[in-house]
Image (cartoon, rainbow, N blue to C red; front, side):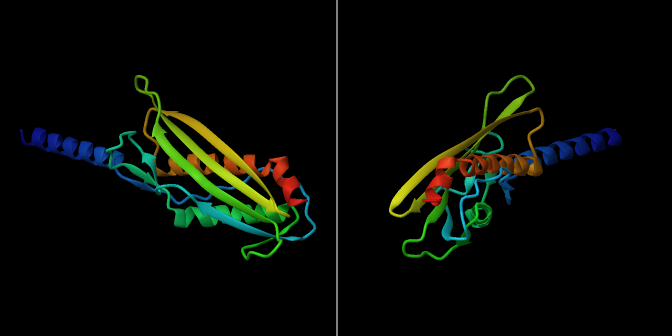
Length: 196
C-alpha cells in the first residue's frame, strides 16, 4: 500500500513539474542574421544607420495562445535592437558604404524599425497545435531630400505535437526576423536610393 501511495505521489509531482514547465515564461535573446547578398552601390561614403523598436511591448505572445497565460514570450528591445543595428550596419558596409551612428548634414541615412513581432496560437487539430509567427520591419532611406520607405513582412506557421521549447522558439524567431532582413536588403529600390 505504501508503495502505491509513493508511486502516486511521484506521478503527481512529475505531472506538476511538466505543467509548470509548459506554463513557464520564455525570455528570448535573439541574434537574427541576414543571409542574402546585397547590391554593391557605394564607394565608401558615410551613411547614418539606426535601428528602432516601435512595438507596444516586449511581450510578443504566449506559448499557450491564451491571453491570460503566464507562459509569456518576451523579446527585450534592449537586447534585440543592438542586434538589428549590427545587421543593418553590416549590410550597409557590404553595399560599399561606411556606416556610422552619427547624424550628418546632407548625409544619407538608413533606419530599420521593428514595427511588430508576434507569436500566437494558430489552428489546432487533434494532437497537433500550431504556432503563428510574424515580424514586420520598416526600412527608411533618406538621401538628398528624398525618402524611400519599405515595409517587409515575414510570416511562419509551425505545427507541433509537443509545444516548442526555448531553443526551438529562439531558432524560429531568429529565422523569421532574418527573413524580414533578407527581404529588406534585397529591395533594389533601397540600394538605388542610397546610390543617388
